[in-house]
Length: 86
Image (cartoon, rainbow, N blue to C red):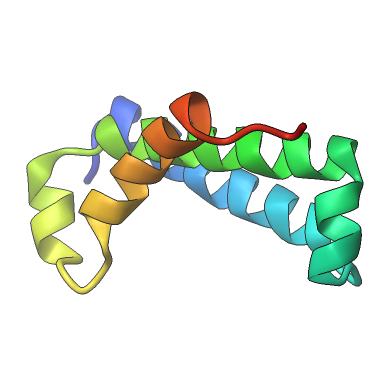
């Protein structure tokens, strides 16, 4: 049974995946790029997913080693430091 911290991290990941899907549903890439609110919301949710993945125990990462954990962690840094909407 995962710890409470791991459970909350998994809930954060699940909930923010669903949010991102809703933010971009029906949008073309051009429309998404032009709609700053959608862009901001989606990138913020991805940052939350990234941070939540860091709170998960190594055992969970190992159990699901088919997932790109490193890329999930790194994308948060990219959005915080490299990505702009201007």
